[in-house]
Image (cartoon, rainbow, N blue to C red; front, side, top):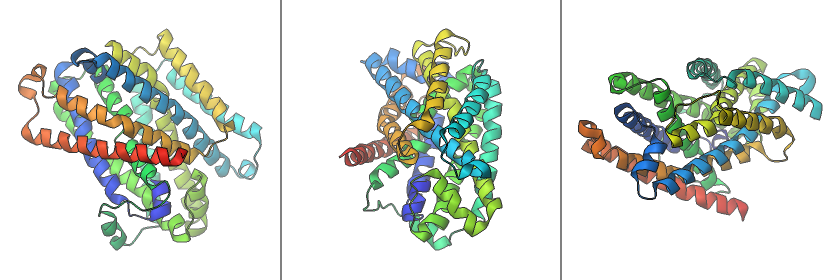
Length: 382
């Protein structure tokens, strides 16, 4: 969102809005199947489709690969932000400072993840998202854009510029993420919810989609109101923080850093856990945070976290590539859930005509975003 806002202002507002609309449809679709059948989605794909095992393994491996790449870019961004926030370290490039921050972060996450009880994780994530939301929305007041720019941004148009396709796919992969959709199914089963909880699940889905749009749009506004005005596209996450400070003051800058760190840490927790969660989904077994395989993946994730600050790569670009990879996997996810929701196992809860229209829209949107992801990645590597 920051990269898009800093390069083209609010011209990609349409991509954020459509992503969040289809995110709502997909979250509810994944929720509905698990609430009715009690099965998680990856296992359903494996057991009910022809070539389901091959498809589910491809989805599993693609998401895990993308998410482990995500650990690297998230850690680099968080470490840079904390170093900027600490005056005594922000002006130095010392490797020891980076390692100390990464080690402290790894220690905190280790204490949270080693036992990994879902309800505890949910409360921690909720607090971090509240911090993130308040920080981003407060910052918007310092750099509010004219309404005309918002209206123009609702007209679908892709800039003719370098990395434009990649960033558009990244927007879709950030909001409408296959990893998030499968985690949604797993989390409902972990909470032992059934169709009696459908109203709670629907309310939760509405809140998720609305808040996701507000936060994503707030970040884009912050970038459009600072870096875009000055003609400085985001190359590092810290660029936007350094630009906000002269315009809105150090207080606004500190609020924004707090939001970004909250966003990063709240993303790191499920990113590290996605591998053991998906394996549990694939095997149709309860998530066991104390199992050997779960702790191995947590250990590997934390090891990547410790090494990440010393990897020579632009974290923002790495993040965009990661999200674009997730967008490429997305059509398989949207097609699979639409087929599952129309099977006999759903009984009277099979998809209505309206819901099928929504799912068809999500499939078309995911295919278009997948196309942009492939084009963007080919252009980048070329």
